[in-house]
Image (tube, rainbow, N blue to C red; front, side, top):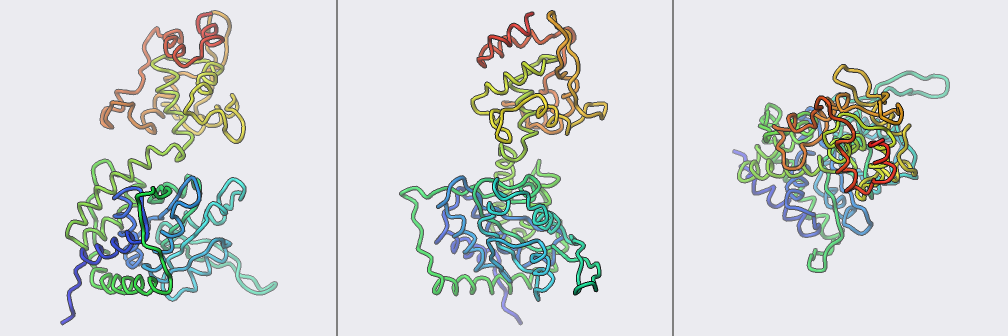
Length: 409
């Protein structure tokens, strides 16, 4: 009879190994990374895989060290700082088992000076789901044939700044930071500690073999409010926690809620959602229409807004139209500027009734409101209201001058 492996105790040991060398920003991060390590050993049992992203605004925040520890704990780990999409596809196809791809310095691939790297982004996006493939030409010289290459594998990344939105939404994001003076870690010595990590890796592999069938058939319960893409990201991690038992199911769901909500609050996640939210909460403030010139003046006056530097220049009318044009009105037509009658003319602007559906669908609840009351909290179009109704809001945003003259006529 084979020995029974205590999954919860084993995950405790994996977490403790991380704590020796890594200082993560929250307890939820330790839980998520530990579960991610284990899920890499069970990836063939899942329909999808979460990307793991260690990100920070400054160097020296422990990102590369975190990736180095993950490397010792995961199967068929392949660490790289740069690679072409073709090389990545061939790595997945050539490996005897699915590789765990570890991308350090990912900012050199997607950073502002790196270009789009759309093929690498396509690899990372498609490999999030089982069956993700790319069509490539294979052969020598003129003897070329089309072939499909798989991209499905576990991927962890570390880098400065942020990542493309399509990758962020597929990722568990760990916002790393420099260690405080009172935060101590054990120096990592590869020739000594790598063997210890590999011993844990081998035990994880053995445990994975005992729970693979159960995990493949599992449909873990999601915490309330975690749906759609976040649910896809966390499903394999919660399945691992449930298979381990002990306190891991409870800790995993608490970590899920914390990190999903943190991701929803991340300003970098979507410039469009930030724009919609600022328009609702800081510009319209209940008015039924607003001239474009007033909108721009108020957005640019926000001290905490990104609008003074969008693609290296201040937000203008054309950029505003392009961003809002991604969303649709309640009549399923792209949001576009329309004429607004004022005492002094007929300027172009936007109507709250056109934005209302996007506010309801995409924006987080207004401050002080729950998710269930978000719809009722969306600024309502009141018959007879005008842009003059927002004069008070405009004054406290230092948009007096031209703004007040535009609204008051």
